[in-house]
Length: 197
Length: 155
Image 1 (tube, chains in turn blue, cyan):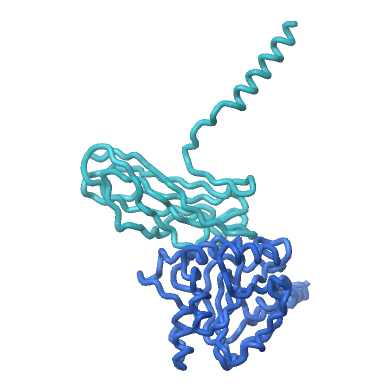
Image 2 (cartoon, rainbow over the protein chains, first blue to last red):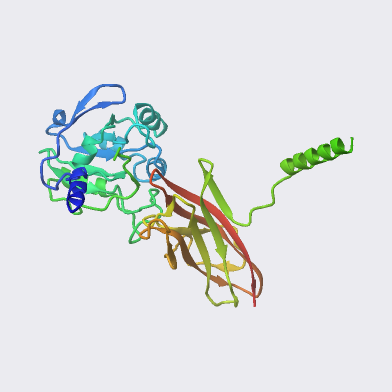
């Protein structure tokens, strides 16, 4: 009888997560056009990973009214690589190539959207929410992980403390200036990532 | 013959019931995937006195399978109010009384949010605005912005 709880614990998938200051877990995923995209291929560049679910209302709000409206385009102009990743399992809300493609078009996104239906990459990073963001510095280390901003409505209308702070913009500024990221770790808000289990 | 007339009358009554406009719902209620996800209510017990702040109550009730999302910043945006004042253009609502869900006590299925209101003058007044809130199920979250209105009588 005592074995059962132990077995239950062993059956829980590992959510180790990407550690701050440590090498970001490498991955290769297909984008919505079927092209392989590998994190290792961006070595020497700053990379932003954005966990994405086009049907999550927080993602919709952030991409149409909030801090994600033009973040990727602005940062890409500065040479930052921005990758959106959909780790929703087949059949779950917003999951799959077609929904990702439609969402990217609807939100006018120009950055690659990668599909991780097995959830392997999402779990390797410890992505729990959509949106959930990670900044990887040019050395390949995790420099920031957490929310896009401090307004957990996704729209930027309810900033905690009264002033809207885009944590990702701030982290990217710190990385570009080669200084320690002032706020490297925040709690992501939004929908849960729709993993298979 | 009498039986046929009676059957026809029943059919006519049934058709009339189907085509008749439904009575206006007293509370806002949203249906998602054919199942109601929440009920929203604005109420106040009073009494209301001019110049004195008192609380109305915004209540979000999640329907079976959903719970009130505790991480979403619930707000009230005044819109169409008459003869009352609020604490700003967008009022952040702090959760008050919380009723746990029957199937999962750590989740709340009903949360009451006090809404501070200050009537400006004696007579009829109206509390009206948009409540932004969120309810979630295991499969999805909904973010809703629902208009509410309440007539009050100020002494």
